[in-house]
Length: 425
Picture (cartoon, rainbow, N blue to C red):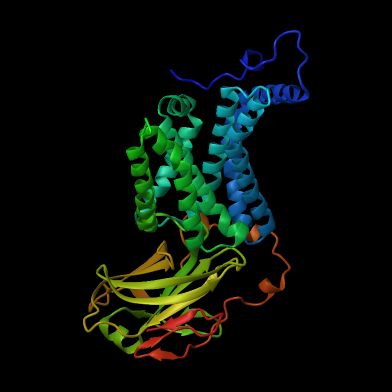
């Protein structure tokens, strides 16, 4: 059975010959190896610590954003260390210094993989729409996290299936970029997704090179042609990737809306007559990191067929979520059936969905009563109220004020104010 390689500085093939005084760099290297050897028996503590850091960043990201950003920055610094390890090792060897033993580098890589996967899990678990293909993506990351703590399987993968190990590594790069950039650089989910795909392709190159050995000219051309195909496949599958920085913190359906209070109101069974006479408000409070400006879309579908698409602009920073709503008035002649409102990012990632049924039978029809439903799982927890609120003027005044938008065309109204969160069709 394959097990974690032992970390033993005395067994390093690059150790200086006996009688020759070690350099200062070699002394520091030996100290590092001894430190890692002492930490090795306690490596089981690393995954829960990474998970706790991810949870802390998740809950602090809008209340104490600087701390969440520092945790995310720590993640990226660890990755820079891992990615530069090979280059540093080659430079040391060229200058005549010993390189770190393979067991040490493998152990460091495992720790960073564990840190990455367990740090990002809270964000993915919170933002996954489990009734969609996003569940498969998040379950894959969960399986990778479990693999990273099973030493026999992890080191067998690293030693015997190098191309698959490089693919594992590239996927870890993808999720760390996807989760950390919106908080650190206030990039939109679409921008973060593009950069994550590019980073994943870059670190997929070793896997492709390993598969195409010996690397002849035709195989090199095939690899260069394969990269755009992989990028296109990743972009096509973006609906399966959770928007790690956005989630719905509350949603409701209502026949009326109190615009001053920004709260759904009224109650009615969703019969065809009710929709024709009053229309329907779809209310979603969407969480986003402070400083993030994002466009989302309410996509209205009847029996799976898209019938309307209403864009909305949101801003991040409000703990309870930026309150956005769309008002649909133009329904088909026969609105009966199963309806779904997909809340999507501008880049096509699903944030959440609202479902309702329209029927002549009031008992079978969904009751739209304006009740705001908190999501299940991590976003629905009230742990944020235990954290101190920032004393910033942005939180002292509502950041989701809206006004009625001007007429933009036949049957369509779009937001015109930069803070508008209301649209109608």
